[in-house]
Amino acid sequence: MTVLVAAVALVGVLCLLDLLLTFGVIRRLREHAELITLGGVPDIPVLGVAVGEQPAPFSATTTEGDLVSGPGGLVMVAFFSTTCSVCPERVPPFVSYLSDHGVARESALAVVLGPQDEPPAFVTALAGAARVTTAPELDDDPLTRAFKVVGYPAFCLLDGDGTVIATSHDPAGLPEAAAAP
Image (cartoon, one colour):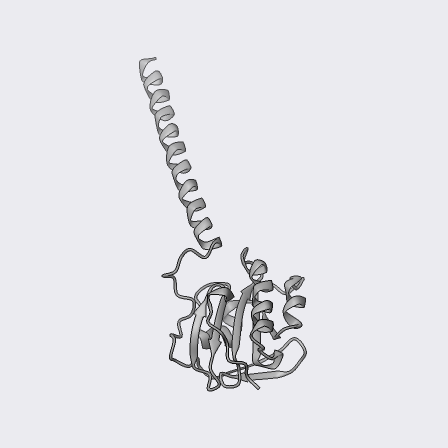
């Protein structure tokens, strides 16, 4: 009988320890989620292509059936994911950035990745301000490979030759764009 009581007590202590560890992990995950949501993780790179470099040449088809190639001729490229919780929040600032800086629709490209069963509502908002391409998965997108996207959302400001000027997870973190013709 004492062995049974000891075993039950041991299991109870182990369950209590497991519960405390689980609460600790949940607390840390919430802290990290807040940092990411608020854009408070400045040392996480946006792209594998560094400032001063050019992305690999690419070509893709927009949702309107037009062929877009580069990197030359683009001023801004934005990457969104349908599975990203922050991406819908960053669409209005992106559209405002383009409008405020006089970036023509033909010089801006928005890349939306993820399941395309039901395109997210923000694709419509993006289409009014930039050309839009979609891809079901990360590996299926030539633009994501060319820019070596690390996380979403990602915003990349380019000069006329296609050299990366600045990158950010938030369009508010980008310098003023030089409007392309």
